[in-house]
Image (cartoon, rainbow, N blue to C red; front, side, top):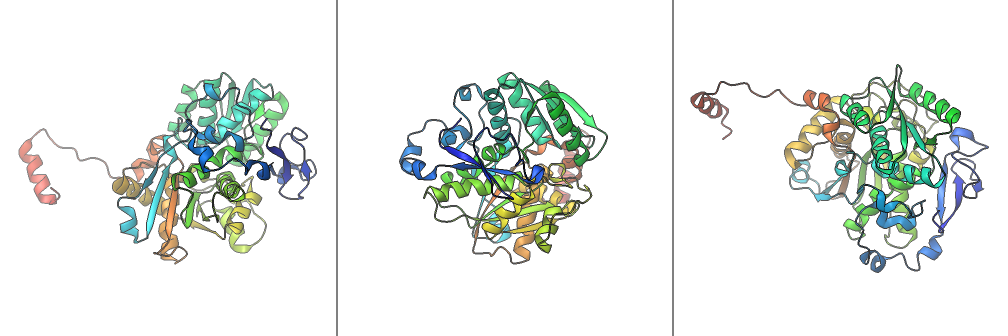
Length: 415
């Protein structure tokens, strides 16, 4: 285990525990007692700086291993995770009339999503703790990422998915050799079954909402964004939200950097949900406890009716002075085509929700035209081809006749 970790702190009762004293959540607060990993920032600050980072050859997420809850024994055996590109927008920022727009494309990770960052930590922790099998419940991305990383490192994986999981993600799971349990129910029922099975069989629990170490993997996306922007992050960072773990990780990454003196302020975070499944938006707007909602969105990766990590997610919004917003599935599909047509990036629906949220936030004057923004593209559109078809029109079917083609192009006036 990383020697610079000092303990675990319950986000609800604030009790501090020693490493290995607890496995997942706070014993007193149960599932609501999500734990936060604590670091010795005072010691790290003495050497974890820009010159130190400049000396590192590793461009993956493991360049930040001193800020991760792992030892480095098996890092060399892992797939290349992280180090994904941060693109400066060529066209969308003009279309949206904002100062500057960046797109962090985490769809380029090995299994096609940001979730590889968390799953990498899961399999390394599993090995450290002597487990041979890892497991989780997921609407798709966490599942496929865990199956990929487990296959790479040589662990068995049992994956629980709701029956609505997209075919692209199911195909990944089966190719990676996972034991897939398709649950005839929603995500909440799927999660419950996985929890019972994990407890019964003693598998390593990769469910990010209750495993305190997995947020630490997700935070590396924020560490990379900051470093790629020379530690001068944009005014806003936007990410889609399901369970709440990813936005919690983004906040934790920027928090780490601020504690280390590498950035002067934490960017405002905008969390985006579908209006067909928006429990965290409702909790944010009402300033009340989270209430379960129906899962009625085509953005499967963020369609979580009972988020398991609401405390950290809402904390991230509040302490970054950010905001939460919801968007319709129709606007998500439009954002998919906008991202593809104007920037050449293929986003799955949940990832495109971030762009749809940016557009709405600009309309509502939450984000101003003179501000800079980073969108995190959390997943590749190839993972959900069915919904990509909904966002587009079918191709033109034409006879192999040049004259007919010329006539069509001239009529369109799009030559």
